[in-house]
Structures are given as structure tokens and as C-alpha cells.
Length: 171
Image 1 (cartoon, rainbow, N blue to C red):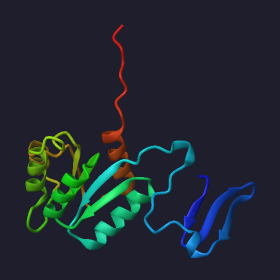
Image 2: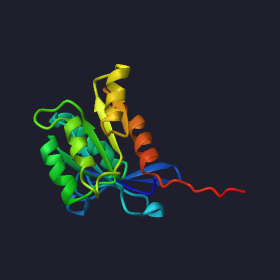
Image 3: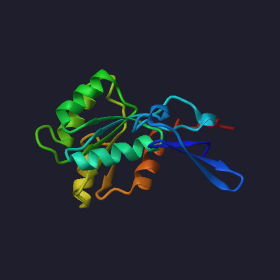
Image 4: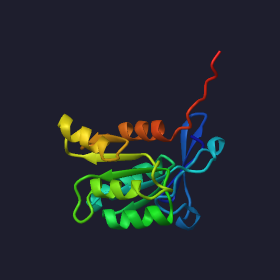
């Protein structure tokens, strides 16, 4: 870690551990701004997050942004479709059971849009029965996570689904 700005405090490594320095709020990054290590400055992976619970949406967005991802967030499938069309994501994370356009209908509609058809989509669900999980994959989701979702598990899955595949040559 080079430096972390948190609510006016800058936390940075020093020879004896970590040094904390207070700066006026005007010198801080806005809340939710992704903090990236200068050595890995690259285009942030764009994630479209759809969740009908405002609290869960806020927490997941903040966690993903703190990991360096750019997050577009929607409280329902209809708004999620608008965001996806306007700013195509690299990955979609969607709740399954939502009022209005639910996760299954949302992903079906996404798959009908040529520029979004191949975007990986992760279903976040309370369902854990094998038949339900197979249905999610058959209906267009790439992967699924069962609630409650562990942030480390989500981060590993995002990395797996968005990491460029390494090519190997046949001998």
C-alpha cells in the first residue's frame, strides 16, 4: 500500500509501521473513489451492480470501489438495463429476486443486446438448491453466489471472470 485517504486522514507506510496525517477535507478524495496503487494504474474494471436492498447495494458498492473497481449501481432490473446500455460493463453482479424486472428476466434481456451478450453475469441469490442454481446458469448467468456473500469470494470470482485468459501455444 502506498497511501490511503480516509475522511481527511492519510494513512501511509513508514519504517516503523504506518503514519497517519490529517489533511483538511478539501484535500481528500471524494467518498467511494477507488484507490489504486500507482504500480497497477490501469483502466478499472467496470461492474454493474443490481440489488433491490439499498443497504446491501451501498455496502457492496463501497467494498467493490475500495478494491479499485468502478461501480454503476441500480436498485432494480429496469434501471440496470438503462445503465448497461449507456455504459457497458465488464461484469454484471445481480440479485435474482427483485420487484419488477427480476434477475432472470434482466439477464435474458442483457443477452439479447449484442454489445452485452458476452458480458459475464454473476447471480447473487438466496437459492441454494442444485436445480435452482442450474436454472440460473441455463438462463444466462455465468456464475452464482449464495447469500450472504463473502467479499473475498466475490473478489476472487470477479478476478477470475475478468482476468485476461493466458494463451498457451501447442508444442
